Image (tube, rainbow, N blue to C red; front, side):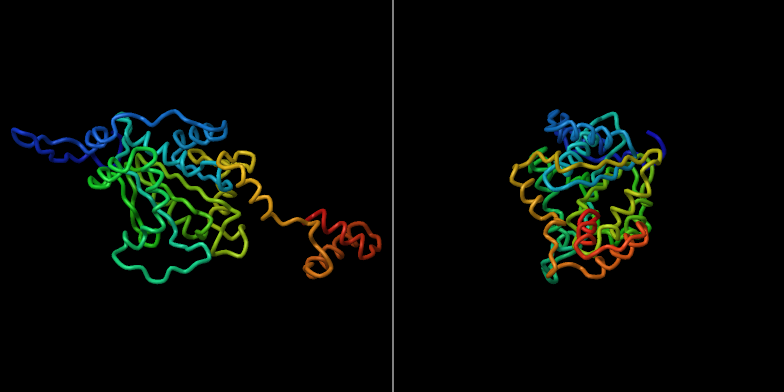
Length: 287
């Protein structure tokens, strides 16, 4: 094993005493084989390959493309592979509600995070079964971290999954990405059209990272398109209805600041006088 934490032996009771087994051996005894080779699109397969070959992978895409499932599948496959150094899956999510405040939640940090982590547990249950997921959690091969408390941490021999990254800030993403240690992988993903704490997607940590790390060794960037949606086809139609259409702009709902900016730019660039109908037509082209 390369630099990083050494595999720790775990006591396992037997009929004649105690056999000390490494954590990796325990993991492989709980989940004895890789998950099924199941990809619903070429994009999913390409994303899986990015995840398994880069130290950090940053992904964006709309709902329904399978980015969460593929990331969790890749994490489980790497975890249960006896030839890899990974001994833990760490799940991190920003504690941000989708336009609905839950108030103060009872319990410790992990209990407070449970509502946000539930989608990840649901995926693990589908991939390896609830019983195996609970056993991995018992031996601390699955852990939940709060992003707010990660300063000062160094993540070794682990696969960290950070979803809903569109609800992080650039400074939070910097904090998270600089936690990576030896023999680790970070899977970062989100949907830039479903942010809950920013006014514009360009203010999000996900957008910032996608722009910064397009061409950096050991960091893979992947973007799904609406055409990659593999869940219920109704999702595509719902997302299409939520898109802003320039043709819907009328004299009653138009943003007059933007209209004035468009009028000024086109008048300067084309050195002609434009009437209101021409400005609106040109404005509709660029918005």
